[in-house]
Amino acid sequence: MADLNVKIGAMHLKNPVMTASGTFGYGLEYADFVPLDGLGGIIVKGTTLLAREGNDYPRMAETPSGMLNCVGLQNKGVDYFCSNIYPQIKDLDTNMIVNVSGSSPDDYAECAARIDELDRIPAIELNISCPNVRQGGMAFGVTCDGAIQVVKAVRRSYKKTLIVKLSPNVTNIAEIARACEAEGADSVSLINTLMGMAIDIERRKPMLSIGTGGLSGPCVKPVALRMVWQTACAVKIPVVGLGGICTAKDAIEFLMAGATAVQIGTANFLDPTVTIKVRDGINAWLDAHGCASVHEIIGALHD
Image 1 (tube, rainbow, N blue to C red):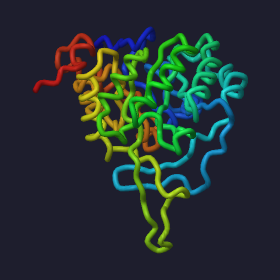
Image 2 (tube, rainbow, N blue to C red; image 1 turned 180 degrees about the horizontal axis):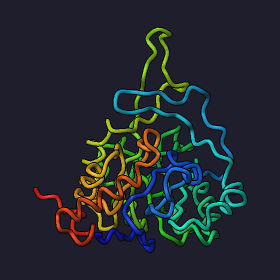
Image 3 (cartoon, helix red, strand yellow; image 1 turned 45 degrees about the vertical axis):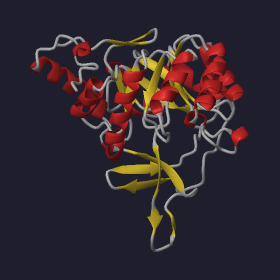
Image 4 (tube, rainbow, N blue to C red; image 1 turned 135 degrees about the vertical axis):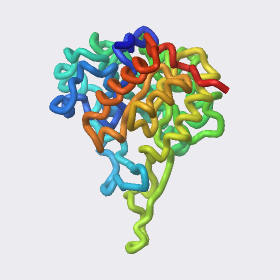
């Protein structure tokens, strides 16, 4: 068996396969399907300083080779997470990582500070694709200045491993990744969902309640792979790749493009055991190709 261990910041992963936020609940929901301790990490659903109800229904729609969602970060807030969810997940034998969202740099920083106090949470993933209420709803992650504001604020209040999740809805993702790195990010993860839309032609209305939503699934993989490769070439910190990963082959492509680890999201809805299949598939490929360690293929893409 090949050595699958990788490192993100100060966090050690037993293998490079993680779950993506919003697709795996708090991990416990999948315990009947996969051994949770067999994963490199679980990124729990988005958590905000205060509770959020999310958007009105309908907020999911199937599209060719993918899906749209506009769930809207529905959650009960960070205090509920700390008092009710954390006690249930803190002893799981894997890295439990909290995805943090907010509407202002101060919101992000305060939410991160409260999670920083939880001993068994080794990292957070900062979702900077959230609307900046002070800039008319523009996402923080679509400009270097917006990304800098959030990462700088969080880095002051959060001392553990900081992963910043980048938006693909930008002109130059490498530039934003470098800005996050300069402000103290330990890693970047990408891509978040692409903005998309679907229309019910009988009703002549959008399929989603707010009109648009985030597109995920196999259809976004070529875009995600390109952006991961561009970003890995531009920064020195580890890159976590995600976007349409359904098989070990998909994951290996991301690793070769420069990702140190990967996340699996939408595929969990189709096959709740996909994460373990991908982990085992990576190991089988490494063994078949005489590789002793996964590090032999990370960034191994030839021009």
